[in-house]
Amino acid sequence: MNQPQKTQYIRPTTFYRKGDLILFRDPELFWLGKPGHTFVARVEQSWTKPGSDQLRYDVTELSSGCLHRGIHPDYMRLLPAADAMRDIDTAPLDGADAGAMSPAAVAWLRQQLQPSSAPLPRQS
Image (cartoon, rainbow, N blue to C red):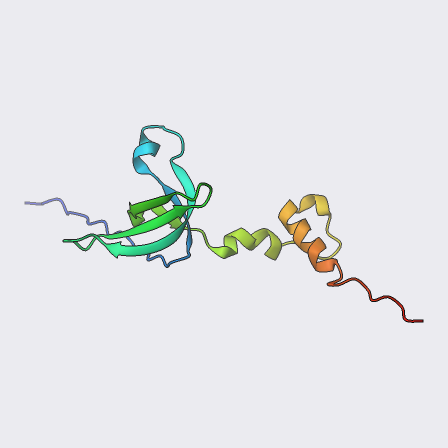
C-alpha cells in the first residue's frame, strides 16, 4: 500500500539588523486591493513575541515617519545597498553618453569631477 509522501516546506529565515532598509508589504491591504500596501522602511528593533518563538520587527516607514510594530519577517525584504548603488557602480566611465545613464549616476559623476574647493586667489 503506497502512501503519499508528505512534503514539508522549510522557509528560509532572514534576520534583519537595526538600521537595515527593507521593503514591507502589508498582506491584508495587498490581498484586499487597498492602496498603501507596500512601502520602504528602516528596521528599529527586533523582539520575540511573548509565549512563543515568533520573531517580530518594529520598523519606521521612511516616507511618513510612521512606526509600525510587530511586523512579521515573511513580509519584509532586505533592500541591499548594492542594489541602490548599482547604476553608479556600473556607469560606463569611458566617454559614456550621459543620456544613457540614470540621473543619479550623472549627478554623482558631476560631483566627482568638480574641484573640491575654489582655486586660491593669486598673490601679487
